[in-house]
Length: 250
Image (cartoon, rainbow, N blue to C red; front, side):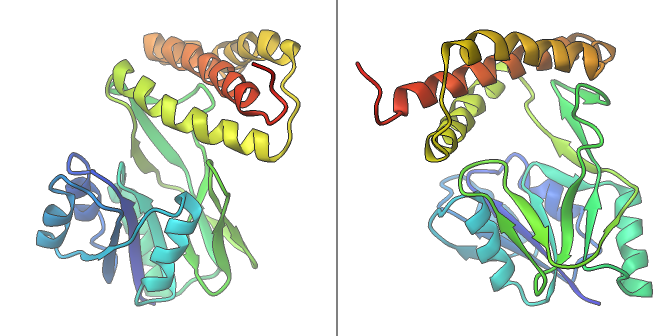
């Protein structure tokens, strides 16, 4: 069993070395870069990654392109701000040794936010399919929150994939602007009716669910920030979708 690791990137010089250096269990590392103007490509190439340039087609499409360009059928797909924990790397080595028992595997993600590992707030275990046979799987999702669908059986790995999210609220706000636009475009494409009630009641409900029902309060001040930002994210997403709607009156 040979594995190709695939990473999509744009201006990820801060993260790219960490993710590549965690991929010792892979037989190939392919970086699909969409026009970085920092040192991302240089760092990746120096660390032994095969770098391919491609214009941006959206998250799911970009990851499918990377999988198609890989040399091997088994794909380990990571984002640039992720890395394998040592325990997860050991699990993957074991699969390579014994052979895969499934067509794809989910991994739990452990996120670091504002310097703290988040164990609640709905952020953990946050299981995602990341190791899969490309002959039986593909990425789907036109706008945001892309995911892998597998035509076959899915197994579970136990160890964490590490996710290094925002290191500051300013960074979170910048990324939120981009992702709320994509989420709003998805809502418009689905013709979701953005009512005043949705704008009024969904954000506070999101805060309550994140902070109390999903035990965000156990994540300390960072859990409070996550709950507030989740509520704000939904408000901005819905308001943008309202303004984008074709029938919107100015």
